[in-house]
Image (cartoon, rainbow, N blue to C red; front, top):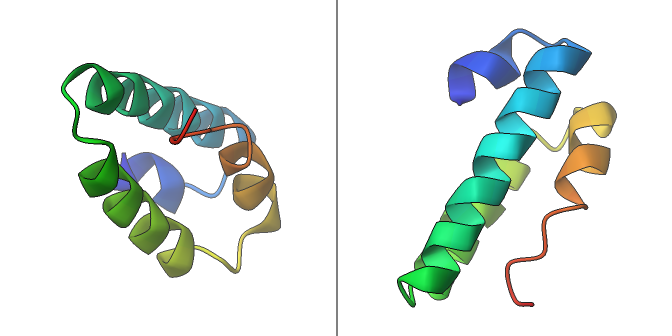
Length: 64
């Protein structure tokens, strides 16, 4: 996923977001939401300087 983000292009950003959404669903299923949130927050922090990516990440709702 980090490889997709590194490309700095819209389509790979969409793919990375889809993967994260799937991982979020898996975390919910496995009762691992806190671990997912921790890692997701780290990824958001690492790439906070990419507004287009952050906009996509806002569609992921780990707590719901």
